[in-house]
Image (cartoon, rainbow, N blue to C red; front, side):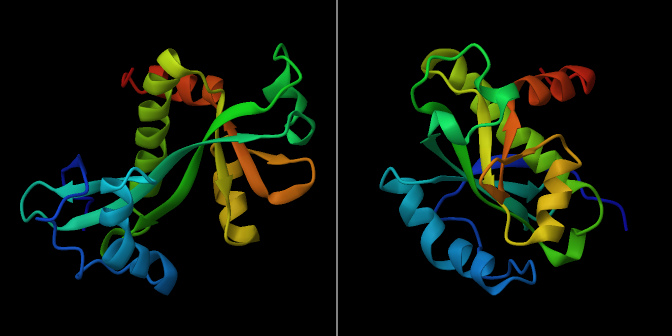
Length: 174
């Protein structure tokens, strides 16, 4: 089966979140129980990949503003910045429904999240996506997209906006 055609939507009351299952209990529970409330109350904003034909949630990601200590950032990120907190956006969660895993949706959602952050950063500042990988395998997946581990925490990574910009430009999505 190919990946269905999908579009992105901000989470809302009308979305059927209960049928989403990515195989990870914590990621499922966040979407089922907490994502919409957080979105509406000004916490992390959650965006869904929704199938065009049946409105099924195929995946999601959550974003919030953040910063990291200048000393923790890799040189490629902090080069040229003042020695203050480094402005970033936290990719709090990214999950793909088990029915479409392995079809490239995760990478598409990562770029969609990056694009959204690039647009905000143009007005408010920011240099990277901050990602907290659940384990080494997930960290490796993010490094395959150009994410760089923090100096003091290899499961925390930064995906530079320059890398995202290049990928989006190459894909014709910017």
